[in-house]
Image (cartoon, rainbow over all chains, first blue to last red; front, side, top):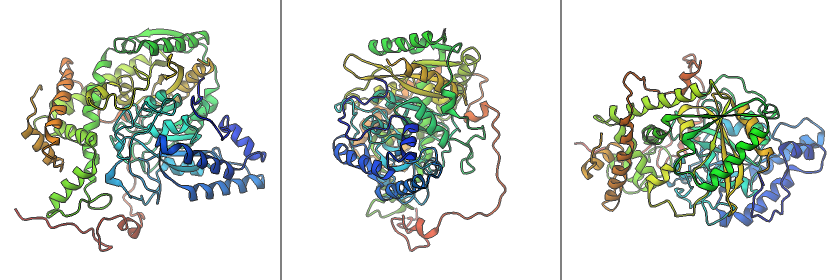
Length: 488
Length: 101
């Protein structure tokens, strides 16, 4: 069942893998233009209900598709992602195309430049179908904080797709894109991947340039791909990764051939299973599914080692202080002056700032800005923000020590499967606690993959999180492939 | 660290953040902030004496941040940028007056 969308009557035959799509294009069995048109037909059918796409880029897509078809017709070599229909989370800027970050404060904003990750996808031949719905400024775990309405989980439309990259995960699950880009600050790629039954990648911090990503928390934000299978996700990462002079935090570390590396067997790899991720609060069916996944790894020749990461429980408070503090600084630029929403009829500049922000931002965004501002304010900075940064070091060092003894760490991605729309919106703290298994890796900067690992009795997807050390994506992909191969 | 956040505290912080909460929003926001701050107080259980704050994870590896040469380079096209402004004369962003205090 891994990688299959459960509901969906597919009128479009989903390309089985990216390399199969390439072969079809090169051998003339498919035209990129026809593929794009058929995806737009599907979007027209399903988007009104699922609310996955916020805007479409038909002209741009069809021009790119025509270019690819021309190359194919001439028998020219095709770039790695030639003709692949992709969607882009609306926090990534695409030149001239509405980029709202899921917020009213950027309604109508058309960026004057392209995000590096987007430029790389298009240079790689990808066909950009449109911009994907997400929680406002990437703040949320259910895609219910979007100013443009929630996204529905294609597996069960009464449930959330997860967040904040709900649209990105749902698009792949509903076959409204073959691959998508999302972003992950505290779990926002991994958790929706697990809720929707698709693969989601958390690259190491600095692996993918953040140039053109509307910033939420600059020391935590990562851009990551979604796909139906691990090899395709690895291929997309290979295209978007790499040093970028426009992002001072991007790493010069060489980009490996992640897809090829993911083919390697896992025999002999040491897999750490941390007790703290299998304790109270973990849904019984999720636990059972993950345990089957761990058994599959054992069967494939991995050595399973119980480990302990005792600082795990401090990750959520640490995250919600660091991330909100950084967000309060990053969102200060939205003030009605240079772009985006400006509140009408303000008498003074100061009023214009506060009215524009109060009217343009949703409740969750305001809550986090206030929390972050409080944590940074005079008299509280040491007790909150500085303390959180100290605990962050303890968490990161704990992972570094663990990776001296294991090659990968596996956990459930989320303690629960996809919950119902409206179930957690009344209690912000309850929503924050849903991130408990993902924020640790976010704070430490390490990499990981969420791979489908079975489902509950009711058919709700379960995801396994495979974590590896900094720049250890190849190992994470190898282990994820082994779980995928078990066909749970 | 376990402070009781009052409505006045929330107003002060809102002012710092250039947010103006409505009277309807205020009590809910106070309650939410109190609940969250109570929860994060858990961090006090940890002894962090002598632990250096970690602001950038890149420092955990061999990453060295290099600055580029201080040279003028082309930036964004002005007309394109100004076209996004809510109000401008093409060269400047126009805003309401700053009131003298």
